[in-house]
Length: 196
Image (tube, rainbow, N blue to C red; front, side, top):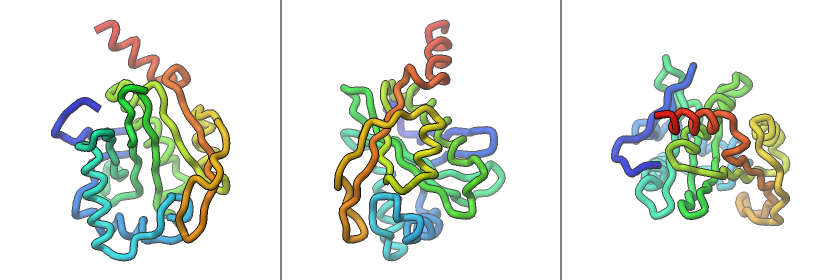
């Protein structure tokens, strides 16, 4: 991500990926306060609206941190209601890598929204953050997420034993990654940039 004060909104065919702001607190709480949705997220459900407001501030702070990133709110182009979020974070500039994380409301699933979001965010990350590697950590039981990442070209790298802790217990996570050379859109961007 290049140093900028403007949030990097992304438009896709059906979606607007935009900054998560204070007025989104109720929708963030509806998602991040849902125990069923949060069982794979890696943190305990939020307890109240104030916690959702704090999470929004934390997402905003990523762009100012030493190892920054961005967290996009996902909405359709027609409606100003969050369907979920997606973020690139823990950016290591020297190693040219970062993590990706995301969640989607139950009512927005099975419509291809997360595939569309991930494709746009990863393309943006390879282009704007000069990434060579995007990592994902996924709970072994989260089969829908694992299937989606593998379809997008992510490669399994192994099981991290008891690396996570939420819900009062330790959790194993699977490590996956995608390299710039494995993402066709990154190659297109590289060709376009070198011809300018």
